[in-house]
Amino acid sequence: MGGPKLIHAGCWAQCPEVLLSGGVKPNPDDRAAIALVATIDELFAIDAQARERNLGVAERDQLRQQRARPNPGINPEPNPNRSEPDSAKERSSQACNYTLTLWHRLTRFLDHPILELSTNAAENAIRPVALGRKNWIHFGSQEAGSRIAAILPSSKPAAA
Image (cartoon, rainbow, N blue to C red):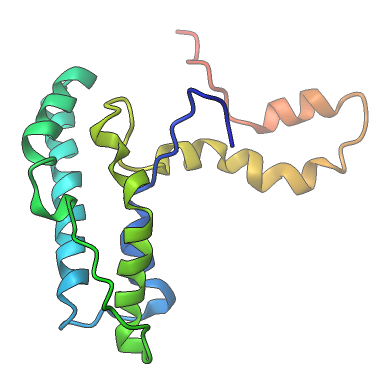
């Protein structure tokens, strides 16, 4: 899918949500889940530090390469012996395995410094369109465009 310049990347913000899906607490004995969450926390801390220091894309990339790439959690070893979970306590193992299947997309930020760790900003930007889509089919008149434009937040900065 997509053109030749499209980069398929994963969203790190979704990983803890997967681990906690269904409101199930992760198994405290599941070292893989604990290590994965620690890795995710470290990655977001690196980018937070870059934002605090007002680093540009190139400088943020340098910081990521220095701190994220050598992180042992960023290079997990696959474990083919993991069994399918048979109880709620083992759902975190299933979530870790699911996250690991997306690992090549999750680690693309190391090779493409323009990528953010999270897609939350993009999701928040399109949310008004997605939420309003069902309602807009009822506008069906010549004035629909101006009405929809009045509802959507402006993407241009307000004039001073």
